[in-house]
Image (cartoon, rainbow, N blue to C red; front, side, top):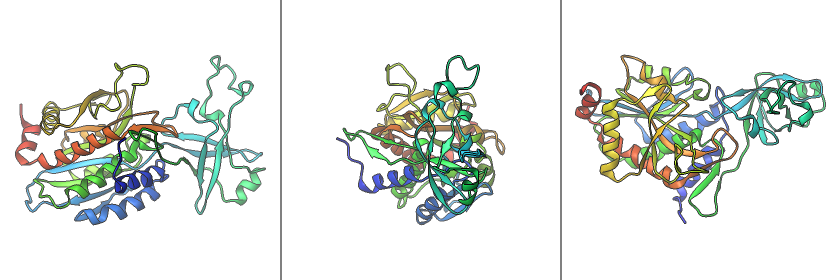
Length: 360
């Protein structure tokens, strides 16, 4: 049985159980700021709420290396209140409608938080013309036990309020895997805090910038302001990707096969020299690493075309059932990704960065 160090396990539980969807990340940001501040020289926040810590180099010309996670998780936003006190919602981020019904959530108003449950759609109430019987998000109402629209209003609930999954994090029986919500992308926050702790007393050949963006799940909106503010030479997105390994060993993203290197997705073709550097670094350090070709995007897409162009790639882990209440993820993969981030941060000196950007 694998045993995560208690300090790290407590951090995993803390951040995966915190609730914050896109545009409503403040609870996550508050906790992250408190944990980040003692580990860096400076903490900066941008106008969309992204938060980064900076470890300054003594060399004013040292390269600027940026690792960015994202704080937000998928959720919902209230769009309408029915006369019978039910809540109509729109998704915030991507949801599979089959996974939404009959789950517990928390509804956040301006001043309070209330438990709510997603309704289960009866077959005869499915949207007319949906011949496959597939539920639609707009057909799934949220039930807080209220009896009328007037009662909902008495509790200060209005359109624009956010609804976020309510889940407890658990270690699974063999100690090798964990089930939690929001590993996409509290994985990145936990990894960054662990890395900064482990690197705290080590001299680095760069200015190291580590933190987290907002609103990634709704179009990578937070990364642009972050990289424009902090001007990195190289950007690494840290994120959790969808594993495809429940039926076959041939799918993209196999749990327990190490950290992920996203060599290609619809928004990023990994720069050649950066790919070679990451692969060589992992090999030399004995870190398990797997290639990943993805159908979705990460903040690497949003970062790469900013400023004068920033070599960017996503690193991370493969996790089952992301964007649901119950994500299953591998402890071993998490540890491999952690080791990779720390090793990269220590090796990116001025010569290496120049070769990555300008080498042919």
